[in-house]
Amino acid sequence: MLSLLLSLSLAATGEPFIAPHQTTATAPVFHQLATQEYDVYLKHWQKGTELQLSHPLFRLSKVSAGPTSFPTILFDGEANGGTGQISMTFYNLEGDQIFSPPGTVQKARVDDRQRKFVVSAAIPRLLIGQTGAIQVTFTGENGKRAAFYVKAKF
Image (cartoon, rainbow, N blue to C red):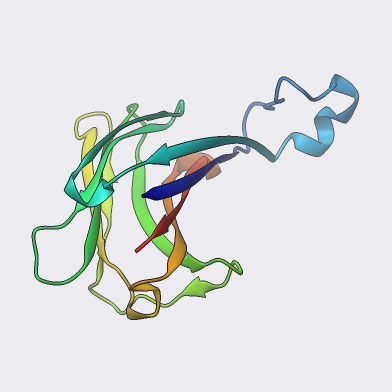
C-alpha cells in the first residue's frame, strides 16, 4: 500500500495569490508564495493509477511504473496553455535532494500547442525499497511555478 502526501506550491511574480485561510492584512507576505496541501492515498501505483490533481498551471492525470527493466516512474498530465517545462526531482524523507545522474530524468516542454506531457525518471538507487518524495514541477514564463510533492515507497 502506498501513502502519498501532496503539496501544491505556486510562486508567481504577477497577481497576488491569497489562500482562503489568510487575511488581507498578511497579503504582502504571501505575494510571492502560497501553498495548499492535500492528503491522497493510492494503492499499487506501479500498475497505473489515475490522478485528478489540478492546478491553474497544470494537471497530473496518471502515475505508473515505466516499461523498462530499470525501476522508473512516469507522470502523465496536461498543461493549461502556458509555455514552460515540466520536471521531476527526488528527495529523501529528511528533505535532502537525491542526485539523479544526467539522462535519467526526462523533462517535457509545453506550450499552447503542445499541452499533453509525460515526464519519467529512473528511481535513484538510494531510494529503491525506501520511502521518499518526488516533486513534479511546472516552471513557466514570468516566474510562474507550481509543484506537486508526492511521498511514496519505492
